[in-house]
Length: 567
Image (cartoon, rainbow, N blue to C red; front, side, top):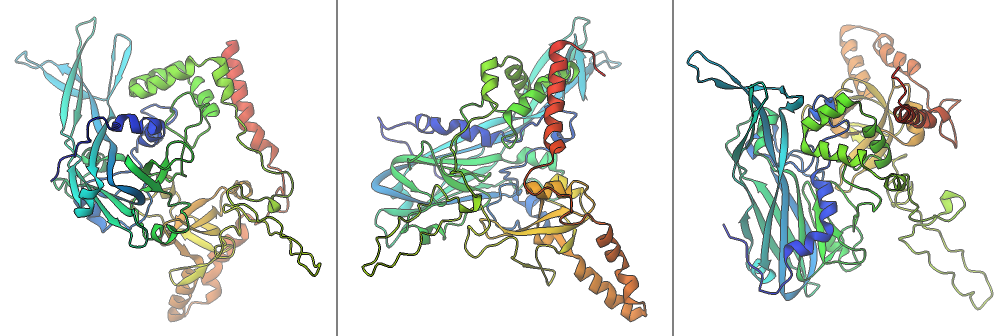
């Protein structure tokens, strides 16, 4: 195994180069690390570590190989970044692999024994002089920096160690009453490697396909090991930064014409690379388990990381501010990062909080949304009138890619896909059967429920997801108005039509009548919410759905500031 190559004296350091993308990389590293209300007792903080997991291979593949995709939420043993780079012959490549290592925090109390020596006994919590201490898993951030000349990679792939050793530290705590406590923090060793390779593109001098593969090489964790223990041997939130001297990377999202065929051959596993740094530059790439756009940035109005980038900072800050004193006490004892978030919210100046209310970055042209054009795709200018005096055909507006019809050949509302041998599309009904492992925790609670398909969506990695609304969800119509759906893979649903036909065939063998077999399905169709409901809104969201959450937060904040008693 190789060791990291060193840059020549006077070259720019990796720390200085990657500093400008540090905020975005940290947001990826700690996304979902701890969620509001930041307490250990909260159910959402009991199942942790959701992105960029590279666990030991024997444990991961206990139920079979992991399906290849760019999805970073899958628990895998490897992560593969493939991208395009234009580089000089003497180019120097820098790669930084970042991840978290799970660190257990165990509170122990000294219990006396007959011999007077005493033993240390683990406890879930302990109150020492009014200060609460909780047993809870933390994480330690690690970085592996690699510097290697491109010429060396063209001669053959290079492999570098990326793991870290384990360790243990003990902090003694002593109470005024003589009670003895201690906090033990421990980490398991991580075995990992990163392999780099490069291949020139035949039709583009100076252009190369670059590959970065990071793997967990631990073979000591057997199948069947509990998840919490297996992840102590895993790399968590793994992501990769790429830069260097004399290199310019190529966007895989919006490649130039010459690069488009080569971009299609870049196969990324459980991560996806995007251009990073200032807009318009091509000196760095960030390969993330969470899909991003080119040149991602943290909003300048955001005062600090709340570990939930999908949430609105203003609402999350308000709700955190309104936690009770007992809730805040538990949150502070849960994790130092939770304590830092509480300090940030409680000491936030008024002018900083006011900026969280929102900012206008750009304004779309007024008028019908169907006539709006994409800012990233210019509309051809009108042509000069032909010599015969006939008016040219009007310039055709370009539909933005995120709107229906914007991606040629793909239409979620009319596309169909085969599920259990049955073609299904929008309007068809299915039974939800999420995977036993690797599925979203919330999806597991929906197992066995029936739902209606709202659209067939194609992911960037070629996989297909079905957007559905639950038949027995009273808010289904409102959610459909907003475009909020549950998403399932095709192997996580089963068509009701297929089940009905199978039941009919079985009853034909036993002499049962078909109407009785189809009765449950017909009953479900009659009792399910209609689509669309006659009273469903066409252009405006329901007033109560919009006003109620805002009013509730306003009332709680007013009561807190005015010292009103709780009701």
